[in-house]
Image (cartoon, rainbow, N blue to C red; front, side, top):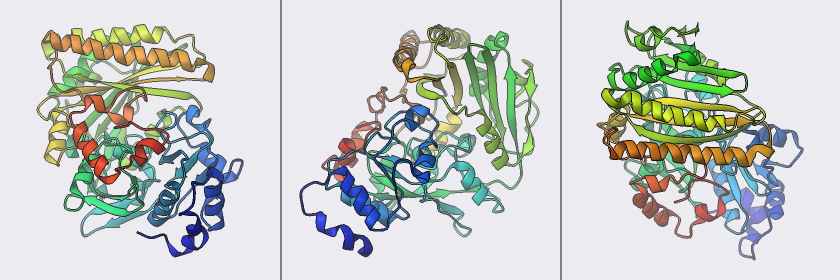
Length: 494
């Protein structure tokens, strides 16, 4: 691949000389007429404010590049190859781990202008850009009678979601979001542009599904769409803390016994200085759920019930209201093989009690909210993921799991060390509890991969993945110098 003509006229002369300083790249891209935003400019500050976690927004790049095309991304990569500067790539800004999609002093590549939505009615596929959020894609598909396997909150960005796996309300019907990618358009470390799909660059295609940012910058995703010709049903139940044990039992039973793949839930508890309640997200892919689907929750008696029939777009946008902004966030995860009914109450309660003990240690942190979310991962999801070609997570297709999301949000940087310590204690302790249960035969002793989208930056994703050797082999083939490993400011390294 060669540089685009316009860009080459301005910067071609510096590619054969000694490495540039960071300021040169920003200046030369600006001289070439590219979108370069500097600190204090309106677009720079707007982009900086578009992070879920204020800890990421506090990291200020030296400049921000906003390419308008795949070729411009390739030009940026080629220029970066001539420097030693660190950079980060940002999609929607929902990842709270600092330096993953944010950077201090280096270069931030914002994909916000890679925002195409091109639906093909003949193939029922849609090409989308990584700079979009899921509610924008749902808006773009209005009137087609089709939808995509995407975020449960509309504000979540496309790029990181799909490269991390992507859990959806539709996953029991159609697998992970990543399983529904037909083609990845990728800029590699040598600045070439390739397509990765089932027939071209097939090994790269396989590792991009849950492989993160280790292989290139994805500039477009071609997604398989699915029929959604009616409204859906969903919303929230709210429960009190006195109903905890009943809810824990209910979420275990739902994971094992629900047979309707159109039904999905998230069960979340939030604790703070003046807060202690369960918020449950419910979804049914139809105008209303058949009788009995959610009975084990409705029988407990929610104090608030705002479930109703509405469009899928409206439901995902409504869920955005539960995304608290203006706080620092950390996020972590652990995977629980589902215990059987005989041991279920004891196993789930042991994890629940441990989470409460750790949450107690941070209740004096200003503004803190501790959250645990139980996300059912029934074999309906894992089986469909395997049948659709698999992915890097490689969950056992004939077993049920629950994926835990473990969050802390709080006000001030002064609390970072305390929250960091609590987070490490939390996921390490839960991992040890699950291991003890597995060794005692109370949960299946099976593969327990981690879910990248919910992972804390200190957790070792690849150490838990039996697909790691395959990913490393592909990375070596497409990036023999380790450009992405050495030069991006964050990510789950191979």
